[in-house]
Image (cartoon, rainbow, N blue to C red; front, side, top):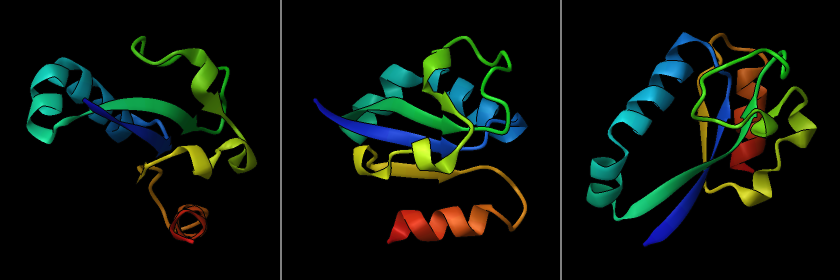
Length: 94
């Protein structure tokens, strides 16, 4: 089965719900999509803050320059607000 690498911008309430919903339904989602998803990077304000247990602490970064876009197939923006989310998405689309 094919694998897609995901990067998430932000890890607040919405992003946490997104991840938890995926992990709760992972088998069914992967089967329907014909791929598996691997969370590779999560950009947050404070990378040392404890977050959902399904994601390893090592994938959290607090600097967009550490958010390696070359290793990602999908970027999900769940930061809220306009700035810096808009700038980050523009860079991802480039």
